[in-house]
Length: 506
Image (cartoon, rainbow, N blue to C red; front, side, top):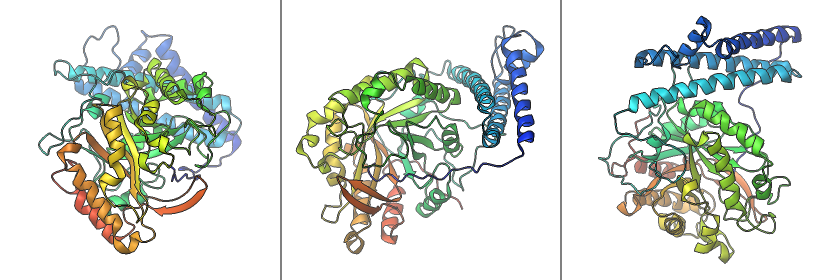
């Protein structure tokens, strides 16, 4: 969004150990990992190799069938090993300083183990679904894996595919592997999604838990942001799924600390990506995502139809017409070539059209210009904010025009309100406009005409932005006022909207 809050604080603090102790410890880890790799790849028939393969849930030539409970135990053992190595790696990274070569070896070994574990999980999933009639997710291709079709959202359609944590958020537990749904399960979920953005989640759940407790219903989605200068963050995805929340990452093709008023970032144009300049980065990212083996939503370069981000097509951005689509397709194709699309739900999400200023940005043809095509998109979505007391505080006013275009540009695609919020500034404080807007949101979701809207993720933060030279601060938080919070509490617990959400426990 143009009101993006970026935190520069780290979620873990580096420790300081004696250099000699670090060198010995790091060397021991590398040697141990080297022995594992030699056992697995050099002597596949050895007893040690067989044991490692068993721990990873991979069938040897002597095994043609694996008991489901035994396989789960092996997956558990492998996951424990991976988490242990990741902990050692983080410690080594913090302490090693210039020992980049040793750290790189650790990363390579972890990636190898994660890849093996991902394959084992896929085997387990295939075995459990054989004969059941369920379909795999395949690639993000044509949308045939449940990515198209409006679906229905009645209270009798079933339960969600996630298992949201109803208590205080927790860290991943190496002794209890997290069961995650497949991409196909996510695309075909019969109930709606309810997510939040809060400061520093999913790395710090403090504010997220506070808001969840005040709302009283457990979320099944969490949003966060990354830039094109950051590697795949397995920790963010794992921490999300440890709490039964589908991670939705907004991935921006600019460095993470880029200001939201920087329309041009040298070296990060659409053409730079199309030309292959970032292919090594994208390949590494895709391979790490696949190795992690947990699905996620990627909202790539959102609000592209506005004028404030460097991936939009305008003179200030130095991006040619049609370059956004080519850029998106290129990123998608790199992921497809590396098998990562089996775990990615691609969310194409423009900004609210009727507040873009220039009339050309509001036309259907302009919106179509940015659509990558049905084969490259799983869900469509949008950013939609209520910003001023001069506006009518209604769903139709904030979302109506944009949703109308989405249904024409991408017929049959499910719609996620990917980033939404209402301000609590100016005269909206005294006249309760925000609470009226929230009530209207839930009224609209209960309308059968909006059955193709599969949920929303609310931006519960205070943020300062500069858009077209105008600086403003907005309080989007759900708990900004008691009447705003109460309107949301009343709406989220309605039984005619099919959220299937559990009560939060304290």
